[in-house]
Amino acid sequence: MSQNAYAMNTVLFDGPYRNALLPLTYTRPVGLLRIGILTLAEKWERELGSVPQFLTQPYLQAAFPFEPGGIQRYILGGLCPNPALVDAIAALEAEQSLWSGAELLAWVSTAEWDGVSPLPETERIEFDAAWHNLQRPWDLFKMNAQELEADFERITAGRESAPISSTNTVLGHRIFAEPGAVAEASVFNTLTGPIYLGTDSEVMEGCLVRGGLALCDHAQLKMGAKVYGASTVGPHSRVGGELSNSILTGYSNKGHDGFLGNSVLGEWCNLGADTNNSNLKNNYDEVKLWNYERRGFERTGLQFCGLIMGDHSKSGINTMFNTGTVVGVSANVFGSGFPRNFIPSFSWGGAQGLSEYALDKALATAARVKERRATELDDIDRAILQAIFEQSAEFRTAF
Image (tube, rainbow, N blue to C red; front, top):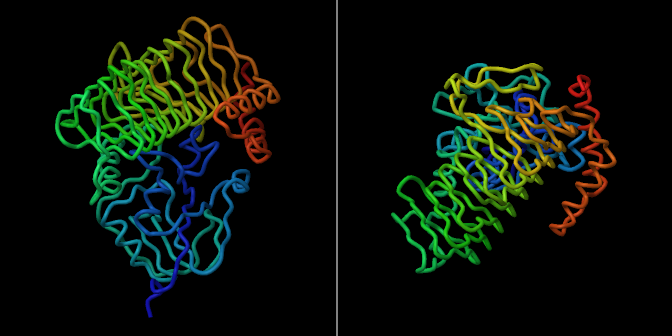
């Protein structure tokens, strides 16, 4: 009898690109990165019918418990599901593994595994169709358009949109509103990509939206916002000003005028009024971006690349971020001029210099920010931030 006749646990393992995806993966497993409308875990849950567990870093595991037992379906955490890949993974039997050349995509086993050790002997199956895996932070905005399209179909197929107010102007027909979504006196162009309005999301008056756009549950576009595809405003996030080809993972704010383009923000970030980032160098040269694993800058192959910001980081009013800037976790950036292109976690300052952001003060700020959204910075959150503070200390030695 096929092992697929029995229930399998889906386990997303971080894989070999986790460190290259920092700072976004300092605070979450790779499988909880958001691209399109959904996180990777939410995509796989819809495709395979089981809520994934995570095989991640030891200091994160307490927040994302992993309970092995029975048959485990291990999947590379950064994989974006497509029909051919889903079919191939769903067809795997126990002690079979799916590969693309030297890349392990998935395997099924009753054995416990730590996510990094060599596999025991398995029957190797080669996957020769197209597949996409997140390997660098810029992959998120680079691949966001196609993932918005895929998620829009996943979520809306066979469903009817909630009604949208007649005060809006809609070009095309690819707009879908969940219950409780509110939009008034705005322009939605779906000819360039789908527009998804999540549960209890809000589009205030005068917004100009060019698809694709994912405005996730409880997210908000402020009055007069200008949004270019393909952009994702994660749950409980707020956006004003100008947004282009960017992702706010969730619970983050860009509430005022200013430009954010070709960028990714983690959770609990806040960009002060008139914060702007450059996404194109004046000489139109290829952008280089900080890579934690290499401890240096690497070529992106991109002409357009903006800001990558880890969780709990903030910018003051009128902050200017240069092309290809990476800001770590719990950094507070402010002041005139362009700060450096790599700002380590728990940094305080800007172009005039940086100092270490004391851990107790950073934790106090994080707690206050979460309290404003009726959530709590619990002991597990504190332990994770302390671990990141210690792990990132080497990058603050130049202060």
